[in-house]
Length: 145
Image (cartoon, rainbow, N blue to C red):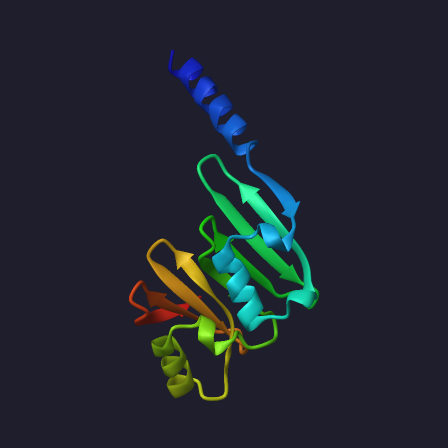
């Protein structure tokens, strides 16, 4: 009996994961708040493509640029991650307290990636490959190994 319940649950999980599909969409199909972030901080003409990932109960959007940079947004268009590869993330996309901390503790470094680390915090990757962890209140809590 336990084995058949496990098999049924496994089949349901596999079918639900199959519902997740990345779809290329037009920039104009992004939520307005996501479009605003791109328009204010990046060059729209450098957008390589935009994808929408529809999960069972949510959507996520990803914007990729020709230089390899990427932005990730939740279904409402709130920025979840920005990865500028080797370039600095625009200061306006990072909380001021985090910027101040990085500038005080690592004056020769800058943030190349910023985003949610998990449901309880944030992560900043510096150009020197150091990963800094912050809590939900953007207070420094440690260095990620």
